[in-house]
Length: 364
Ligand code: F6P
Image (cartoon, rainbow, N blue to C red; front, side):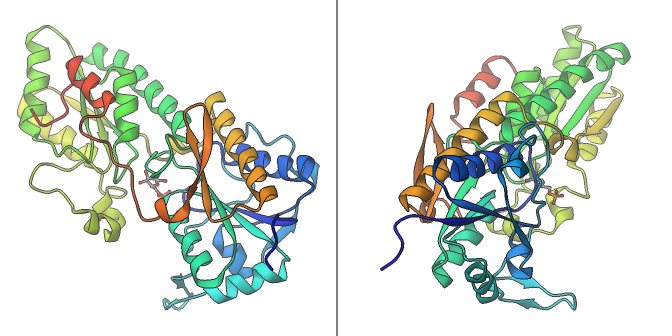
């Protein structure tokens, strides 16, 4: 008969890092050790640590002093156990090796802190090998299905909003168009939230393909009204009308197509300068949005979800993601989360408010 509760667990952080990961590790670990008497092992470098057997057992002190620290003390990687790239470029399935090491570490459950890719990898692992998993939703992109919000998003929104605030005064001083490129290669939650919070005049997101002429006209209209500048917030995955990528293409697109090397913000700034005659500049916020200490809201969210995960471990409820729901949390079956992305709905209140306050979303 299977165990009904966990006595020893592993924690790993996978995918891109984000503020709040350490707060979540601390939340899971302290509640697991202190409240439920569960031993906690930290696995390094995401799923790579499971494949390479790279781990250490945590003591209480290891989890002290990390609440406000950015990044992840466990480090991270984008390694997928079922599609592991070897040094000579081959792709092999390392799921069985990962499972073998999980058993050698004496684990009863693996807690995976990650984004959409991590939810999929965790489900693959549990389905293929029977390893028990519980996941937590982190990503500045805020695009994981089944949860109201992901930790990391609030901090990234604050950073991007502050950047837009700061761009206002320099834009005004020079009578310029300031294009600010914000992370989000598939979804526009961050650009939309920071754009509205920072009062951007145009906000371009992947879910609403833009017509550059519509954006230029919005800038000209502001100019005619005597506004000396315009701020354009662009998600890195924003695409012009007619050049949208399908979801399938997005899933497979190389980094330059996703805008990581090619910056869509540069194209938008160049085109707006040509179309309006107003001098333009571009600021790419990049990984600044993922660095540094988490906001109090992200610390609270990560702590709440982390301690909730410990409760599930003690109750033996695996195979779930601990999701944020209203003021609290709920356990969502991983099958309902993995492989689904939460896009900005076109009738979302934030989209409506942006339109009502006169922000151009590029489509009209
Ligand atoms: O975590 C998601 C994300 O922040 C995207 O918004 C961004 O395009 C991507 O990560 C960047 O990834 P990397 O750190 O691997 O360059």
